[in-house]
Amino acid sequence: MSTVFTQALGRVRSLLPVRADFALMARNPRRDLLAGLTVAIVALPLALGFGVSSGLGAEAGLATAVVAGALAALFGGSNLQVSGPTGAMTVVLVPIVAEYGPGGVLTVGLLAGLMLIALALLRAGRYMRYIPAPVVEGFTLGIACVIGLQQIPNALGVAKPDGDRVLMVTWRAVEAFVRAPNWTAVALAAGVAAVMLAGARWRPTVPFSIVAVIVATVVAQVFHLDAAAPIGDLPSGLPAPSLGFLDVSALGSLLAPAVAVAALAALESLLSATVADGMTVGQKHDPDKELFGQGVANLAAPLFGGVPATAAIARTAVNVRTGAGSRLAALTHAAVLAVIVFAAAPLVSKIPLAALAGVLLATAIRMVEVSSLRAMARATRSDGLVLVLTAVATLALDLVYAVIIGLVVAGALALRAVAQQARMDQVDFRPDLPGEHSDEEHALLAEHIVAYRIDGPLFFAGAHRFLLELSEVADVRVVILRMSRITTMDATGALVLKDAVEKLNRRSIAVMTSGIRPGQRQVLDSVGALDLLRLEGREYATTPEAIAGAREHLQGAGVLPVVPAQSPAPVTEEAAR
Image 1 (cartoon, rainbow, N blue to C red):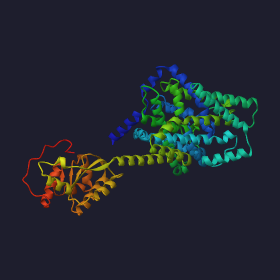
Image 2 (cartoon, rainbow, N blue to C red):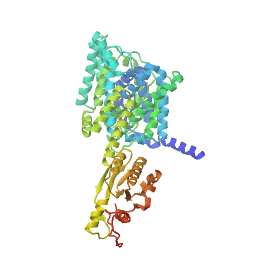
Image 3 (spheres, one colour):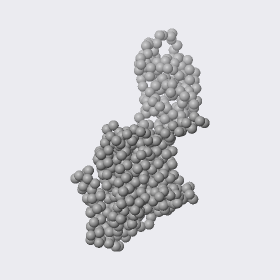
Image 4 (cartoon, rainbow, N blue to C red):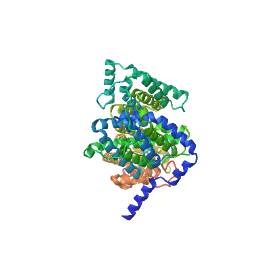
């Protein structure tokens, strides 16, 4: 018992920050401070916008960016990661807020945080690398579409219609706009989005999002644009941590949404960390520590009025591009946003909602990498199908179902491709005949013996094809199976092989095998196939030995005349297979 406790304690300690993480902050603090300030400027409108989109208000987005941003930077597994509210998480939270309110968000956040910490302790981070690229690309495309559609009501200057299906909400918002057009809101949203998109092409390092939002806010105030509804009053500071909204009665019904939040936080955070590693030289994140950091962040952020958080690819990319080299940059980003919360809340509260909608519309557009999507679609039909299905499922269903559908379809297509690589070819066995034989004996052997070589995997996805081929063997006396090139075999493959041998034996066809590998014996033995293949000593180490056994079988059946034994020819490596 003490050993288990010691191991568990050691595992927890391995996930905590170490001295080297903090020593790295002292290498180039000026560069990290500047990078953090730049990321904070970029993150401010995004945090406000995602807070509004979640349904809990702009203050929830700011609280998340400050609390989750600081804790994920301290406890996470990447030196460059920047965390906070994201569009993908907002997509998951909207129906939770609509049905359960702030209490549901707090409960989901706490459950998701505990799940992420459990995943870290179980070392589950390494398994995220097995998610296929088409699933990731389709997931990103679907999220971009959902984020863009979520902004339509604010961009059109209409009240958000009831409902949690983004397509239906968007349609109702368009209908409301047609009845009472608000061109002021449309102009502000379109202007902010245009400035961001054009500015990103002209000067990628300049934070045009904050510039566009400031200009839009000034214009709305100077010209008294009543149609441009502002964010509204913000609290001047973070609320004290509280469990007052915890919805214990809904724990059962909120378990599934919590799983969705935890899965999304893990997926997006580890993808973002991988992207950050790829943009730098010498940086490598620890996936389990990253899950632990995100778990701590999601435990804490809802307590301060925030929403569940995840690492943000866009903000992380800005952090890397502006020269960040340690966690100090992400901590600076959180500190700057905290100062804004305490010192500039009255000014931030005047930002038009339409301007934030424009920021998020531009963000959604920039999330879509057209060249990457085109390359993925052109790679194979399977990749294109997985990408499209994942994107459509993200838009029509929800994010977790979308990823599950993408993984299932990708896995099925991959198994199909692997199964198609397996084949069973009839081969000419006569060059491997031991000793000297007359032309007449060669003809008799060729008439009564057929040899097959099985190449590739023999498993559930393609094994039944072999059963059909073997069962329909022509009227011969002996079938030789050369099995040394079978790369893998599962129980289904062994059962199918056993079934085929039994059917051949019932037709009085003897089955000889050669080259069974040690790793295949356990599988064959577990289903009783090995005893069947050994029937009357019909299992051989090499193909020439199997041919000699087949010849003896034919002699015993009176098909071939009995001749004096001769020395076998030398066995080549190819013949042994």
